[in-house]
Amino acid sequence: MKTKIITKAIWVLSLVSLFTDVSSEMLYPVMPLFLKSIGFSIVLIGILEGAAEATAGLSKGYFGQLSDKSGKRVPFIRFGYILSAISKPMMALFSFPLWIFFARTSDRLGKGIRTGARDAYLSDQTTKEHKGKVFGFHRAFDTIGAFLGPVAALILLQFYPGQYKLLFMLAIVPGLVSIGLTFLVKDQKRSVPVNYQKKPGFFSFIKYVRTAPKPYKLLVSGLLLFTLFNSSDVFLLLVMKQAGVSDFNLILAYIFYNLIYAIFAYPIGALADKAGLKTMLVVGFILFAIVYAGFAFNTGLYYFFGLLFLYGIYAACSESIGKAWITNIARKNETATAIGAYTAFNSVFTMIASSFAGLVWFFWGAGATMLISAVAVVMVAVYFLVFVREKTTFEA
Image (cartoon, rainbow, N blue to C red; front, side, top):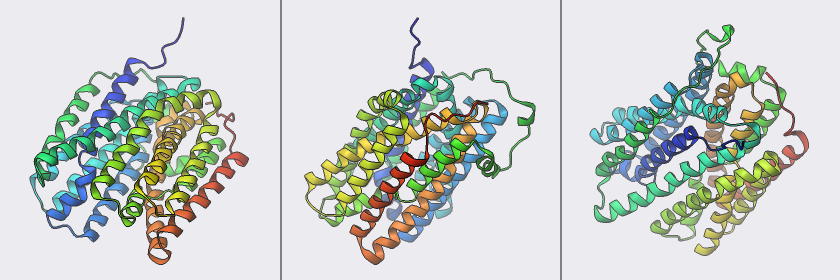
């Protein structure tokens, strides 16, 4: 009998991510505008976002390992989504800087709590042969939410210009839907080794990286090397802005990118299961290099949209494929730890990458920033081709 690849639990978690992303991405394009409207300076906005991302990054490692040690997934998934959902209206209640910091970091902490457990749960629902499909399917739904969120925000602000607090309050609606859906997911019975009963320290996931299987170290080293040159997508939008693209077309470009990402995530995941996860990841790196090299030369709107089409395909070849590969080579009882440790370091490296890109931009301009990233990522692709073997796995 044919095994069902996309199970009910995978469907539910994918819908949870969709509604959560609708809630989050309704606010993403207007977050800087809202913060400036209540008196935040550019410096303070930068500090806020840096603190929020650091909170999300470091907590991913800790809570991923805690999920493995407790033998539970669903409580972390559910509480993580609850925390993110309730943080949205919290930001609209008061405009005090400390309160805004608390609300924003609560949102990112929720992401940190759920990420490792959720990805491990997805991994438990399938086999090695179908990881690309499953993670691609989940990513497709997640990105559909990232497409619908900004569209909803544009429509609302068209009728109610400047009503940012109303937008924050309405964002709780899809968030509540996502919370309700988490109650349809049930934990599977999992045995927890005796030596896993001890509660981990907050930074103990760092020790895991040192003792992890060699294939994991080689893979994660390459992924983090790539992250060092993968700065925030804000820099791509800034290049477009510098070339004279209007604010409306910038948001439209962001929506277009997410739409392409959503359309290609599942087909590329399915292709990766046949052609190999490594193959699709390397293809993604090459596409990334082409896009960044293209952005080094400011031209017209349609040119940028063409590059963003390729960038959407690159995105479908990267994050979900990388996570699927990690779950294939980690010990089964350390899946959440493996994902959590990687995503924790990934968050830190992302901050470093954006800081480095900002410095290069300041001293040598946008073109140099784009070209350095393009050349470096070609070298990352070479690293994967030479040093990383997909078929090398670790058996617990």
